[in-house]
Amino acid sequence: MARRFNPPPQPIPIKDRASILSIEKCHLDVLDGAFVIVDKTGIRTQIPVGGLACLMLEPGVRITHAAVSLAAQVGCLLIWVGEGGVRLYASGQPGGARSDRLLYQAKLALDDSARLKVVRKMYQMRFQEDAPTRRSIDQLRGIEGARVRKMYDQLSMQFNVAWSGRRYDPRNFRSADLPNRCLSQATACLYGIAEAAILAAGYAPAIGFLHTGKPRSFVYDVADVYKFDTVVPVAFRVAGSAQRRKHPEVLDPEGEVRRQCRDAFRNSGILKKIIPGIEEMLSAGELEKPSAPPEANPIAIHETSSGDVGHRG
Image (cartoon, rainbow, N blue to C red; front, top):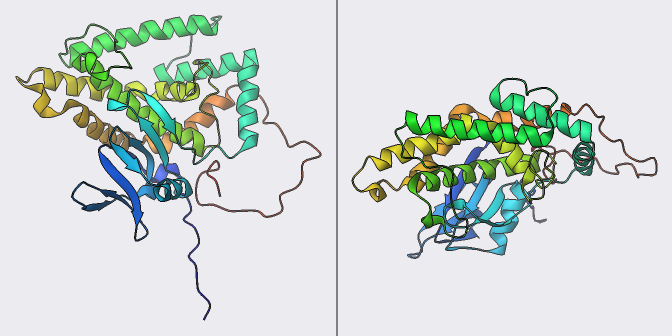
């Protein structure tokens, strides 16, 4: 009797997934076909990895080849981060398989006029108003920075947070004050799902427009559009609540930030908005997507996938 093999798991669209899961000090493996956490006593906890956009691995996590392979097959982005998600050490790449989209993104970034139009669209989406006219990208960056500092100050007053500005050392997460630690944890969560969405849409995290020269420049561009509608208020709310306690460590502020960020992502529907938002930003550049060169070979086998266009089939 011929043996039957189940087809490999296919990615599901980002918009239908849960946002993030952050884990630490455990062992990740595939046992009996399931993606599981195994603790030091041997107890298994299953993780629906195919239903996650991003899995953040903090210090103390060990992961097997089988677990990495399964995460890649189902399109869950694995990110190895430092304590509190402040430092990025490495990341998997379940998407980014569309060269046409990479070329389109690079074409926009290399055209000064198109790049400025994309940056202006990001500004409009972020602040719900048009960017000032006749401003360069550097000038818009300065205007944006001033507005962001003002918004931090307003949120600190709203949630009664002792705030002295955005200051932290990525090499020493614990050296920052409580509000900055909460903010770092919150933005790390947002960066994770932004990168997962960028890869799922077939684009490159490194090719940015306002941010440049970093491995996650486009991640920062995209995340900034949604930051103040999602994670920044969460960070200030948790920090304010913790500061009012006599023993703030009892609250586990960083863990509470992660949990509330997941709620904020779900309530805001960001996973349904983020890929269409990326397309809206890039279309503002008003350049045609590059067509295949005439010598390119036609597709021999047309593959269909239930995931997003950038997921590997």
